[in-house]
Amino acid sequence: GVPLVGVLSELTGRKSGCAQGKGGSMHMYTKNFYGGNGIVGAQVPLGAGIAFSLKYQNTQNCAVALYGDGAANQGQIFEAFNMSKLWDLPIIYVCENNGYGMGTSADRASASTDYYTRGDYVPGIWVDSMDVVSVKAATEFAKAYVLKNGPILL
Image (cartoon, rainbow, N blue to C red):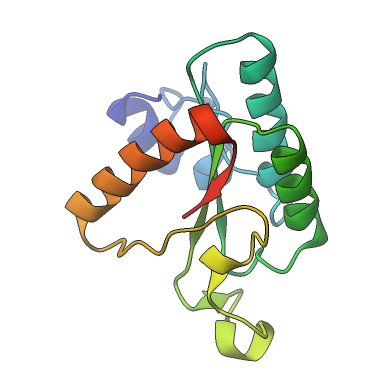
């Protein structure tokens, strides 16, 4: 990942940042950390591609693709879920639900706000993100799961 100094420097626009202070919070990139994206939800299919690469190379690693509840209705998310399950890719999809997407409440934008259930054929687990011990346990479980069974949603 990115060292703490690289993250904080990037967030404050300093040259010592991981993207030389030009990317801010949306564009942090370094080896094995492919950052965010200016297009809502675009990092999810990118994560599936990284997972495909990991599987192709026969590694014991997995990809983690994070997206917000505002991106959860994007078609590319469901396409990535489908391809990931077809090929049983080692990827953990994480929906960060803060209840709002670009200022619109999730209840007004989504017919279902149980985002962890939206994978249909990809299993999901609800995790209390405010409980660090729960997050650690769920992530450990999810990594072991995806290495044997393919994708999972958190």
